[in-house]
Length: 457
Image 1 (cartoon, rainbow, N blue to C red):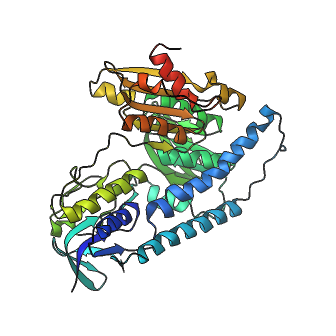
Image 2: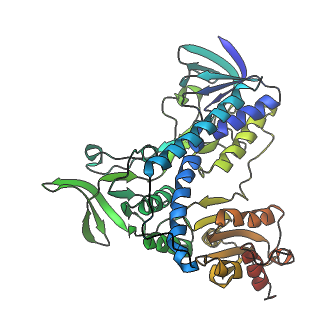
Image 3: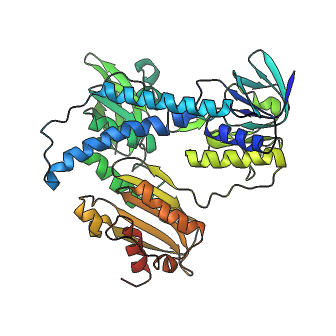
């Protein structure tokens, strides 16, 4: 039986960063991956979806071009085969780069196969058994499939299969109005697919503030998406005409036909087959229970990334991986701090947030003052014809410390880092208002709002 100091199960973002952090501290690390190599972000998440969304972003720009005096033609030609080929090529290169990075590390041994715990200190990978003093579980997540009558018989796709489609359908129903539903819905709509988006709650991205959800809903509808909210009792039915998705919307039964059904109702920790009970690792409905040190109920086994069921964003996965990797070697010396974590939805225009939303603050009973400034009042947005959306800042009511920010608008995923940096250094709105900004620039939107909030407008 081969022995390692540390074994990491899963070579996605959290697993690779955890393995490298432990190896950097001198640990001999066994890194287990079932394959294909790369993890969700590279293979099925961040990178391939954003490659696709770049194409739909350009379509949006071309459609708006006449507003600034440019006429690219009445019809935009779409070669979906080229879009997919470009995506596949980029992803293959990124996956290989990540693979080579692991192979080059002298303290990491890559093991291929599916891991299964035999005890708190032993795992089986394929036909081989390995032991280690400490483990990191970073097996990522998988799509959650809701119990919809008739769904299995009708057939469906998730985001995984959506990225492998060889051709575009004429119509699609997307069930779920979260990040995946929003991004894929807009992409397929701009590709010319008739998209119907069904959301169980009364608004899409229901965890965000109401004004954010309303702004994004308007964006989707402007792209021709048939957005239905407050949906209940979804089922798939068949009749002589074909397959129908039946649902109740605000107490009225509706039916819609679609060539493809896509499920985008969230993801859950990928723990099947790990035999966690043998290792004494507790779970919850969305994954593995872990404390602030990323320790599980077995103090020698850690968990990081999507498998814990937390916010499924890659910058959090890599952050947790590094902390877990350090704690695997040094013991529980570093806690995870989630105060400043920017995240984005890459629709067009984008949405991004960092820190507390207004809703978060109110629900926690934190006294705050909230400011809001529209892109339609920003010079650079006006002259570049990107006036949709707004920025919102949530600040401590007494001291003015910036506790959170949300942006719906052009380049939101870039602009949000201004707020993230300010929050990292615990800047107040008044202090931020002293920072000089280039004029004209989209970045000024945060300065103008800060000026308003401190009465310097």
